[in-house]
Length: 234
Image 1 (cartoon, helix red, strand yellow):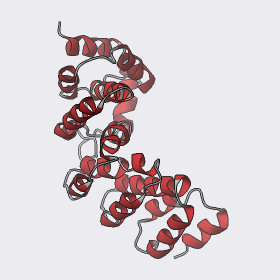
Image 2 (cartoon, helix red, strand yellow; image 1 turned 120 degrees about the horizontal axis):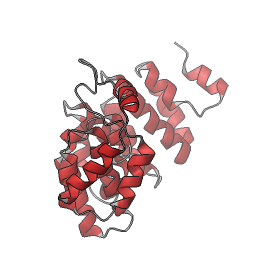
Image 3 (tube, helix red, strand yellow; image 1 turned 180 degrees about the horizontal axis):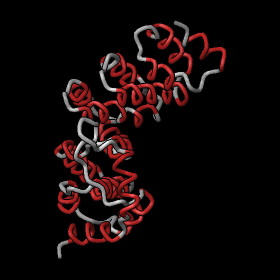
């Protein structure tokens, strides 16, 4: 049995029929929903992290094979192995992880997969490089490309570099999907919290009438009650 099959077998053994039903509802896998057709084993994230740590030295070929799995949690395990290895990776290895990630964005197809990996792999790699690819992804018809582009900016925000967060927020301000409203609002909130609260306040005040209400609520969550009330006014 090759390494990828071994890891998938371990994941299957940790699965639960009861949790599978819960996860399939939670991640909206029914027809017409954002996670339509995705398949779950019923493995919770802490257990998936445990398997990822056990196999944290799996090579890039194994990771790529795991990303092709039909099982959501197996793909998550692959992403967590990458983020685990990232901590000690040199520039060459980071480039390999980034390239692998970007070659498999069609398999990174739900918000948890994006949110647990994009800041480290995409944002981490692009932190000191041109970021044009994020603007290309923001124009993609694939919802998860859009979310990767936005959530990746968390890595920049942590370095007090929020320019791309605001530019991408403007670019995708009128996105049709609620999951993007939440992602954009979340990144704006993080920018205000970690970088410049005044900049966030001014941005929201300028754009509050065009911002979807969910995005607006997420963005201003850390402001005072009086500030929130003022910014939420019709």
